Image 1 (cartoon, one colour):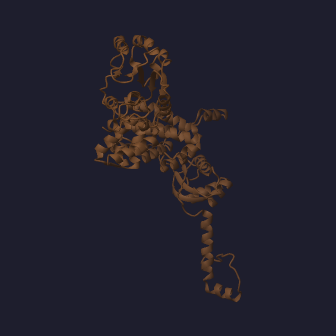
Image 2 (cartoon, helix red, strand yellow):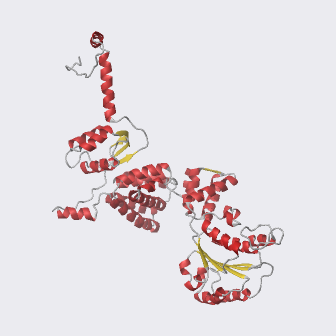
Image 3 (cartoon, one colour):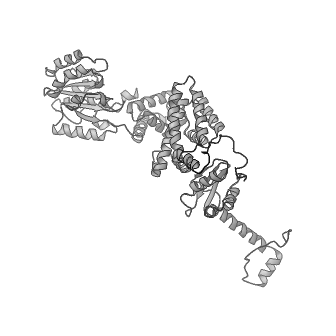
Amino acid sequence: MLARKYRPVNFAELIGQQAMVRTLTNAILSGRLAHAFILTGVRGVGKTTTARIIARALNCVGPDGTGGPTSEPCGLCGHCRDIAEDRHPDVIEMDAASRTGVDDIRELIEGVRYRPTSAHYKVYIIDEVHMLSKNAFNALLKTLEEPPEHVKFIFATTEIRKVPVTVLSRCQRFDLRRVDSETLAAHFAAVAEKEGAKISGGAIALIARAADGSVRDGLSLLDQAIAHTGGEADEKQVRAMLGLADRSQTFLMIEAVFKGEVAKALELLSQQYTAGADPAQVLEDMLELSHWLTRVKVTPQAADDLAIPEMERVRGKEMALGLSMAALARAWQMLLKGLAETRNAPSPLQAAEMILVRLAYSSDLPTPEEAIKALKKGGDAPAASAPAPAPASSSSGVADPVSFDEVVALTEKKGEMILHANLISNVHLVSFCPGRIEFSPTEHADSSLAHRLCAFLNDNTARRWMVSVSNQPGDATMHQQGEAAVARTKADAAEHPLVRKIMQTFPGAVINQVREIDGGGN
C-alpha cells in the first residue's frame, strides 16, 4: 500500500506542515521540548506519523550509538528501527477509541512511574484522544500537569472541540493544516514516477482534488488508480474510477438549467449516469461550480487561479459575467438541499432529475426585490416562465434574432446606439447560435460589453441568452468586413475597361465611390 510505503520517517518528509516542523525542529535543537503535545487535523494529514517522528527524534542515538535527541533521526539505530516497526518497549501507542475507560488510564499512569528500559524518553502516543471518557481525562490530569522528566505525552485527535479545556491547557497544540491540491499533486506525481506508473497530469489533479487535503486518502486513490488501469491512467479513466462527472459536461449542465433548457439538462445527466457517474456526485460538482462562479462574480481575480484548468477559468469567468448574484445564490441553496434529498432517495437518478427540473423552472423566478418593485408599480409580481424551446417571437411581436446580423439590427432598432457601435466595430464573432453568442473583443471594447449585450437580449427577446468572451481570434469585425467589401468593389470597378481607360487618361485619379446606376449593375 502506497500510504504505508511512502509514510514519512523524518520531519523533512512531512508534506504541507512547514510551520509545525519549524517549531518542533527549533524546540528539539534548543532543548525546549514540551512535556505534552496535542496534534489535531483532518484525517490523513500526518498526526500519528508526526507523533512517531517526535518519538524517534527524542530517542535516536545515531548510527554509532552515542548521539542524543536530534531533529534529524538517523533511521539506522536500534531505537529508530524499533519505533518504525512499532515494537519499541518505551514508545507506547494507545487507541483511545477502543480503550476509553478510567482503568485503561490508570494502567498507563502506573507505567509512567518507571524509567524507560533503554531509550532516553518513555513516549505515550494516544490516538483519537477525544474518545476518552470524562473520568479517564480527569484521571490523567495530574500526571499530565507534572509528568516525570523521562516521560512525553503525544495526543492526536480529529475532533479537538471534544477534548476538555483542562487537558488542552496542559499541552502544546499543533493544528495540522489540510494540504493544498497543488502540493498534493506534486507529491503524487513524484510517487507515481517512483512506482513506474504513467499517470497524466489531469488524472493526478483529479486525485488531489478528491483527496480533500488528506495525503493518506490521496495515496490510497493513487494506489487504486494504478491497479485499476495497469499503471497507465488518464483523466477519463480516473474520473470513471472516482464516479465523477465530466467537468465540461458539468459546465454544460449548469448552463442548461440557467437557460431553462430542461430537456438538454436531463439528457446530459443521463449521459453522465450511463458513463458511470454517481447522480449525487454530479449534483455535488454542480454545487461546487455554483459556489466558484459566485466567488468569481464577487472577486473576479478568483478566476485567475493557475491551479484551475484554463478551460474552467475562461468559461467560469464568462458564465459569472452573464449570471446574477440572486440566480447563483438560489442555485446553490437548491443544489445543497437537493444533494441531501438525492443521497436519501430510493432512486438517486430520479431525485437528481427532479432537482434539475426544479432548478430550470426557477431560473426565471423574480427576486423578492423585483417582485416588490412590480407590485409597487401596480401590477402583478413577475412570474417564472416555463422552460421550453425558445418561442418564435418575443412578447413585443419582434422575431427573436437568428443571426448575429439580426442581433446588431435589433440594437439599432431599440435605440441602443453605443451597444450597436460596439458590436459593429469591437466584436470578433467566434460562434453564434440562437441563445448563445461567443465573441472575442478588441482592445477598444467596453469591459462590460458581454454583460450589457446579454442583459439587452434577455430584456428584448423571449429567449434566455448566454453571452461569453473567448480567447479565440474569431471573424473580422462587421466594420472590417464592410471595408473589405468596399475595397473589393473598388478593385472590381478598376478592372472595368471604361474605368481603366479613364484612369489612364487622368493619371493620379482615385476611385472614391462605386454606385450602381441601374438594376443591371451597369
